[in-house]
Image (tube, rainbow, N blue to C red):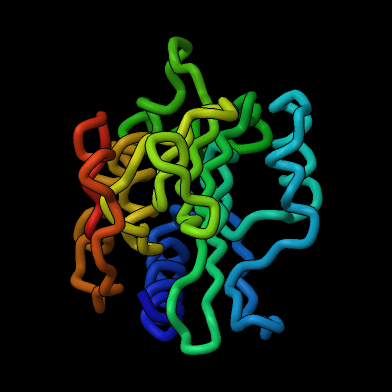
Length: 219
């Protein structure tokens, strides 16, 4: 996966979430040069998401300090962070979904309650909201316990479900929308399913990890 491909996808998906109204607030991932290469989406202070504090406090700090890239209609926050080496090849990524622990009130977000055909599935009282993170971190690889690319559900320290590939910006966005904002996704599927330039990436799962429960991720 290369810097130019990731940057190009980010441009496209940000245009789509703004055009469709899926994003109610956005901060485009900032480019920066580092001593070892380049980064996209660095957020000073975003490490709060990894601290041993209550999830409510994590969310409030991310939201109040604008430590996100896309804010969804119900307050869910999306974070896109990619690091590349000096050749522009992907070195690491952290992609996070941080749902709001409480729904906005009708006064704060009247559109949520006005359009049941779009938001009815995210207003259900039976939903348990939890953060999701996709990490690509080959430098910390450990057989069986820390896959090169992995999915973490909730804030469980040792939850690292192996993935077959690193995850592109569009792959991450579509995963969140299809699974957790399904009605909203269906309304705008024509926009979100338009073809994009592919972020080429090679398989990084080991044979040992394939024998464990894992996810295929190639977008």
